[in-house]
Image (cartoon, rainbow, N blue to C red; front, side, top):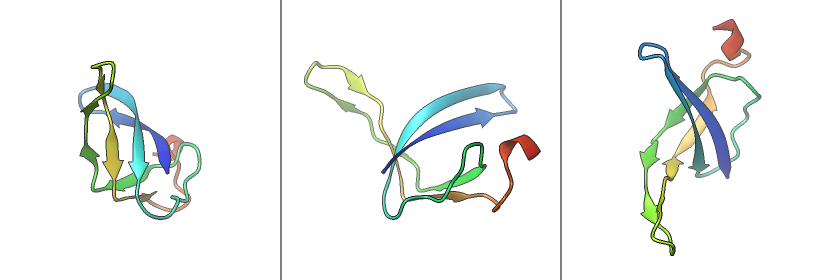
Length: 73
């Protein structure tokens, strides 16, 4: 399964969107949920056009706290 995750680092005031391949069952998340990502690995590779492809993998993704949205944080 492939998920889009928006990452924010409040201390440094930066944010980024990444796509993450997740092993196992489909995470039960809704839009704007805060989530815990376990075993996140950056695994870049080079495609046939000799371009660097950024790829991330995770062992699991789960809601940080059920029912808590990013807007409430």
